[in-house]
Length: 252
View 1 (cartoon, rainbow, N blue to C red):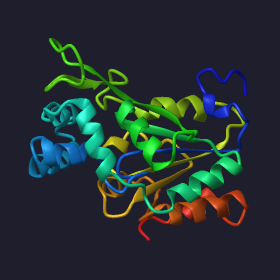
View 2: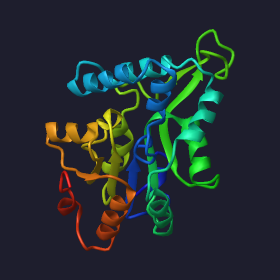
View 3: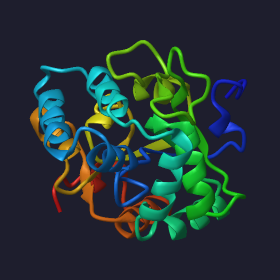
């Protein structure tokens, strides 16, 4: 398949690749929502922002920047709070272990911040985890010496898109290749809209905004409540018991 410099998930020549959102998908709660709701401008304004992004009246990039800008606590303190309050989604550890044994790379595509994700994975999976992360980052706010100062950090977006991180760009590096692997994606919310149409099978978390978007746009998907469902479906596809088209059952 050529060089894997831009497509590191192909390094082991896999037949399947699993792309996934992180916050609220790999974890039960969204760490960015948690920071905003408890330390930032609060849950009501955040929820309204989700509605506005779905309606197309606000870009996710601008909404998310406002969320994170409202959190004054130093980054290191934010990370410590999240490590005590964010937990792994049931079934993900088992799926991760199985995917490692069966040469199915997991690639996290996140609208969140890489140092936060890495710190959480160190706690949730142990420090030897093996997952590629493509996400936004964090840096000192202009005039600040350190991200660990009060009001000292801000988002550093992955790209210049209206999403801040257009997840379709990374996925299309793979989907554009001949004889490519079968590709999955799992997500839950408005940060996943750019990825929704890009893979062979989309897992959308039940009762969340991504389901609403898929039904509005006619995007094939199947719902999940935790990773035990995802795990069984992927195992059945890998074993040839079903296929991606049959698995896209919508709300179940």
